[in-house]
Length: 335
Image 1 (tube, rainbow, N blue to C red):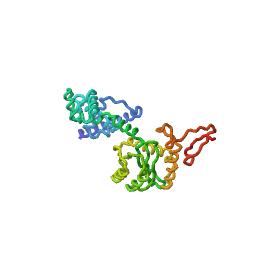
Image 2 (cartoon, rainbow, N blue to C red; image 1 turned 180 degrees about the vertical axis):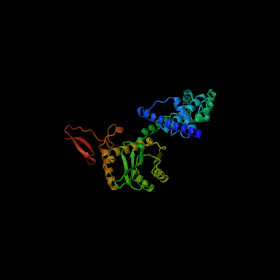
Image 3 (cartoon, helix red, strand yellow; image 1 turned 90 degrees about the vertical axis):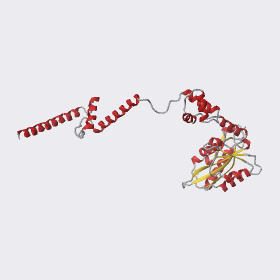
Image 4 (spheres, helix red, strand yellow; image 1 turned 120 degrees about the horizontal axis):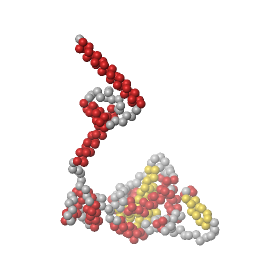
């Protein structure tokens, strides 16, 4: 009986001692909210978390989430050390000399593939896999010569080249209007334009008939790979004694004259108006084309206009003539 009472008293004393220690820890935490723990203290609580299920109830200095974060940091540190000791894995490093040589072979031999370049590198004593060569071939710099040849062709044949394209304009009712136009490369003149809500192949063919009469001087027609320019349109272009020239995929620079006119039209007109319907937009485009031909100067024409605007020889005061409802102006000297 005394033994049992003594055990109970020792347990009671232990509980009172734990209570007193906890009260002192609370006071200490109140005085120092963020105690500085040594690495040994962190290891102790990590082990306690591993082997003691009631560790959360006895933790006062830091939160349980902090102990979990310590464990994850130790896990990352452990595997970082292991990775440094072990042999590094992954792709073999390709020296810059080999990369430059791959790029050189791709540029100098456009028809070569990875097996041919791989064979040449083996003959030169470079131990590189064919798969690595194929991967670096995709990063080789582009050859600028095809682009230069295309620009030379456009410049040499600009009198006989025209281009066509579509662009969209949102309406006030959130509908979409499709604007079709044909532009000549020689003087950047708009040969024809029209607006529709439902562009189809027969509609495009009719616009081409209106744009190119029988005495047309154009011989080449450039256009992109829009689905509206389908096989029927290409056949109609050939029937008009024109040679259809389709641009490459995702290469708007190959139809740069048309793309530049779309940019000018948006910046000069469409960014400042809201189209009510197709007739409204057609009237505005008609006025803009007149302003574009007669008044607006162009960098590609040495600051001239498509219809050859003459420089004023008068010496009177400068007068402004509004265009497009005052959105732009033309300036002339009065007599």
